[in-house]
Image 1 (cartoon, rainbow, N blue to C red):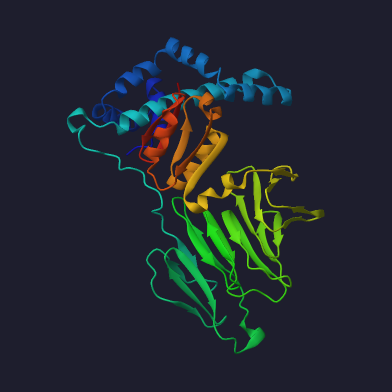
Image 2 (cartoon, rainbow, N blue to C red; image 1 turned 60 degrees about the horizontal axis):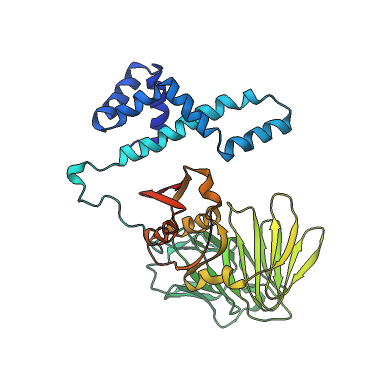
Length: 389
């Protein structure tokens, strides 16, 4: 199956007569097989139609932002317009091609082509410091690490690190860390050697030692996790996230730091934590507060929040309170492992509140938003198109 957006570029060149003989033949073969694409080609060749489409597209927020960037750089507006125009035509054509290339012929309309997109089906992997890898979803046996004298027990969605009898003292520390990877579409739990419990959200990676050192307990997080830290006043627990760290003695808190998020969110449920940054004084937050570290500019802010909104995921719920749809779908897309495209930019800013079970299918979740009448969705495989109404 051709990539619809790549094929849209080929259609655009085809309508202009820019393809080689072989390329033209390949496009024409697809045109013969796919009803409706010939009409798209005719529209791409209609200069007046394209001019009108671009007039509409230029009213989108994206164009406004590009003009603002252009103004600040002191360049003429013309430099951006050809690029925006070409990209806009390809996107519009690509969306049409996506629909036509995936459309079911009428005679087969009664046969479901796309299975319901279900969550929680991803394979969680565990990589030991030695390099050995295991799929936790199907692992039933105990894994032993004789060098660190620990055993890894896996059952009921939880991996437990259990220290064995210490017979050689300080020689038990090993070089390197273990790693647990939870892909989009799943969650998992981990109980560390000190008794700390970690809930890992979808799209998360956690590095941890088999045994902690005498001075500190440190893990490295990418993604989102909820920690219930076993108290030990003589050995702080440290979560390293990007350029900052969260330091605690014993407490419950949530840390979110995805690549596609603009910052790191640390939400405290109970106890106290300190946000540690190089060259900056530690910032202590109290229960009910959230520290936000902006990764782009390196600033830190603290605000009171409803912690239930930020930890509902560990209990199997989406909880949204006055959030724009763009932020909601960013969260939902990780859980169901889908790509989101906005056909109408206005849909991004529609605000919603609500509580939904995470183990519903994505169709059930989207239906809740469509009831409002503000937006509608078109799901093709794992590509979600978003329209406003």
